[in-house]
View 1 (tube, rainbow, N blue to C red):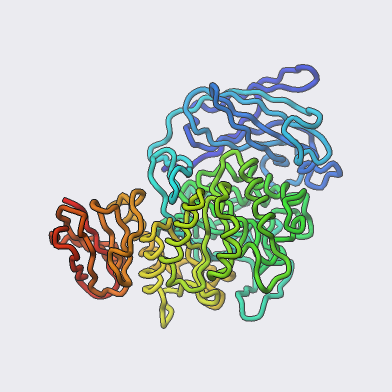
View 2 (cartoon, rainbow, N blue to C red):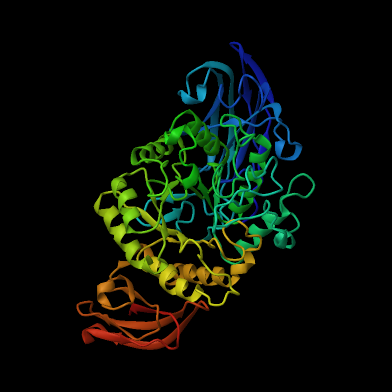
Length: 597
């Protein structure tokens, strides 16, 4: 996939019409389907600090149209249009970002309006300041283009252009990834950390990954950003396809990430910092990565509007959608450990969670994937997830497991419960506990990686889950706050990618379901009965598989989850034999694959 280049097109022709300006904008004829289009409009000159707040009292909406199809996308204030480089806080540039999902001729109409707190009103409210019109042409997608992640399956996301289903093998740490020294106006507002939990002495620099920055890769302001860009390069090279990050941790664990001009501010945004975030997100997007936006954490989920979706929260959400919602693979997560708990007196209620979900359903033009992450354990699952069963605005669960070895049972149970409620949820594991440990570094002794691979990663996948993001615990080297070198878990990324590749290469997993009753033991069975069976043997012990009633004969192959190799032993088994014995070819965890001949 070729790197995406942002297109910035200033108006070429200005026409005075009824007291407002109209611009006809022509774009580069090489613009391709799914490629990022950035349109800049000349508007009122203002600044982040202006008394007439440009984030609150101005509203830009752009409607893109092709034939009878149209989509209205929110725009935003962009200062001088080059703030990532200049650190400008003022200027007259207003911007929209868009990725066209169809080829051919497009037109657009844009309206910049003024009114007190106009962002809380509808797109036609307020006084029109400027109107703009334009047209552009979109060609065929680039070779290898995946398109956007869409939801048209009960258990998996799918790339719109290729039709391939998406399984996540990502990283959950560091949660304060955006607490990065090379981003403008980024600092820790309080250096107090909770006893026994993760702590860190400074902002991230990711110095071990500077060498992973390649010629031609992006940076800003004379070479800033190379550590983080290099780190993303490394992660992509070892099969990581999702990164998790908080966008608001004021009063949380790290206390170093927010989109505002100051940690005490709620209505003014730091344009240059957010443009630098966008450089990083663009690069991750170009490498096929999901961007997992975690909107707050348990310590601050009521920081905005007391937990309501009120003026502060609506503005925060609108700015995130406007600036970053165009990316191909976006997850909006209501928050880390979101919802009722037994140790905090301030948390979002079920009604407040529903309001957040409803806001994104109504205001994200791309209808990106929305998830809920919560506290671990069945008591928390029952208290927080159960009241949301049947809610069609919630796309899935970002499960936290205090006991990672329950992954198969928990995944299967909530897949079944959500489907029975009429709104199936996608199931991913986005924090694997216990909280103090997570996934051990490769060099740790003792080491839990083999157990987490066999029982957690494969437990989720062989129940119909959609993958895992690995959490690095509170007390390990390179943990959830102080990680500087992602290579600390190199081995784990590689065997995670082996699992994902196995599913894509060897299983019609979108047509398969869990049927553990066919093995009757500690094994996992994922199958389209009578066609294909994947049987996970987490302890490497022989197992039996009940094929009675399936009919036919089946070729048995063995997949080694440690190496990613599929061994073709050439063994045939017959359904008429009833229960067939599966004996793994070696020690450790194995997956048997049986396909009907």
